[in-house]
Amino acid sequence: MTPRLEILMYHSISDTPGPTSISPQIFAAQMQALADSGLPVVSPDAMAAPPRARSVVITFDDGFADFDTVAWPILRTHGFCPIVYLPSGRMGGPEDWAGCNIPPRPLMSWDRVRHLAAEGVFFGGHSITHPDLTTLPADTLEHEVALSGQDIAARLGQPIRHFAPPYGASSPDVRRCIARHYTTSVGTRLGVARPGEDLHDLPRLEMFYFTDISRWQAHLAGRGGPYLAIRRTLRRARQMARTHFGVG
Ligand SMILES: [Zn+2]
Image (cartoon, rainbow, N blue to C red; front, side):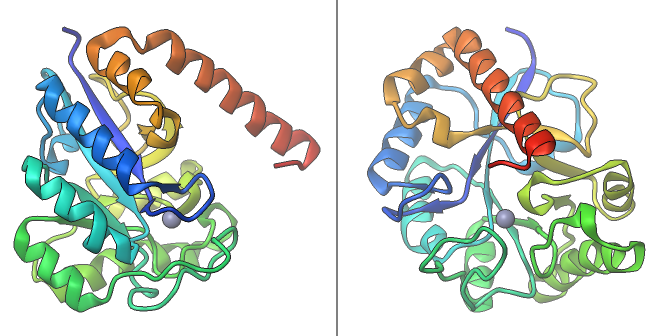
């Protein structure tokens, strides 16, 4: 089998509407299908090395409170240890950034983050205030990127090696800044990571595209290539429309 790392992307596990929420029932079914597939779910540190086999890393952006109350109990039953990317200056409050849900969803408290770290959950940086990093002047960019991981590291007493830029928005300057402080960075580019991938622009699989469990099972069984190619084309067309016509 071609060596590749499949980095799954989640946000909130809840019944709130919108593409950054997946219902608890569907999440449980996705994790059960993953367990049934026998594919190894590996530590996020595996993102730092070229994949040698087909394996999976599970990621969550934003650190919503439902990670602690809904997602982690399901993940734990399967022995899956994910990474959660935290906007360090917003923990304990509600999401409050551009494009957030209305009503806003609560984020975990630092107490819960510490508790989860002790149980084996990994954490990564996701900036301090969740801005679009590509819009920031150099000094603010450095501050948002570097201090996020430093804050989490100080609170958890462990090094923070991984980062996810908010909205997946990056540029060569943003990636260079992230690379000065972190070993890896994931984006929202749709795909699987193969040997030779840029460690600071790792693609992920948006799990909102796999809420149909039979489609997810087909992907896990190695029959998901054509579907992924269609989603990638649609996504690119949407991004071009947004760039050229200011829509989306
Ligand atoms: Zn985010």
